[in-house]
Length: 42
Image 1 (spheres, helix red, strand yellow):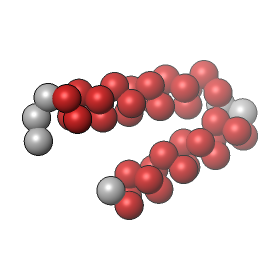
Image 2 (cartoon, helix red, strand yellow; image 1 turned 120 degrees about the horizontal axis):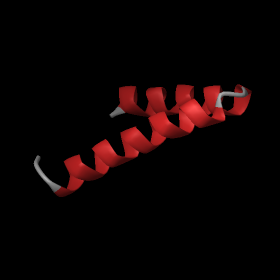
Image 3 (spheres, one colour; image 1 turned 60 degrees about the horizontal axis):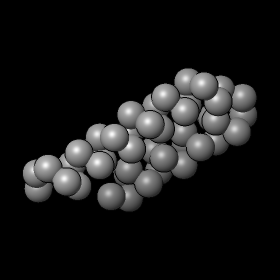
Image 4 (tube, helix red, strand yellow; image 1 turned 90 degrees about the vertical axis):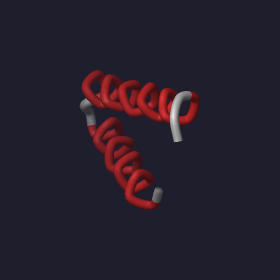
């Protein structure tokens, strides 16, 4: 979980530094993956 938080922080920094579109797609992909994991199977 701590590793995941670190990855999200890195993506947020990249997004701020000027790769908003790519970062946004990555964040959405992560969010969808997390949502499927939370809903579907443990």
